[in-house]
Length: 180
Image: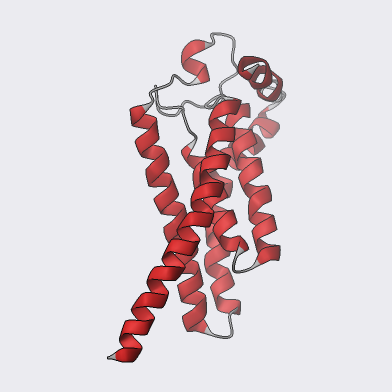
């Protein structure tokens, strides 16, 4: 089933140069725009201190989730589609033997889910971004659907946990500062 879904999504690649460039953009570079958008949103906060805390919490959670995904990649080596399938349409290669789980899917879903506790409407845009990035990672030929699904699930769980853990830590630090 993993292979069948891979071929279905991967079949959108190779339909034309401009379309392939669009797929490449959404599989990788689009993520930079999402992070930049998050940083720009800081300027729309009335309370800059709170905005800085919120952005720090969301980015810290996403990077923590990415680090966990990275550990899993090395504990559970798994070949990428282009390493196994000779007929996969590959728009670029990325890594090798480290397909599971997708770090991109994990990072951006953690970003979106932790953002949900701060700005729900904006978080929905970021969830859509995570879904697009993950799907396009399959289309370019660097991930299996199961890698992406696992990344979304891992990112969602770590996004929720990370947000609450960081919120607790910040509350404790703030409490200690006020006591001093």
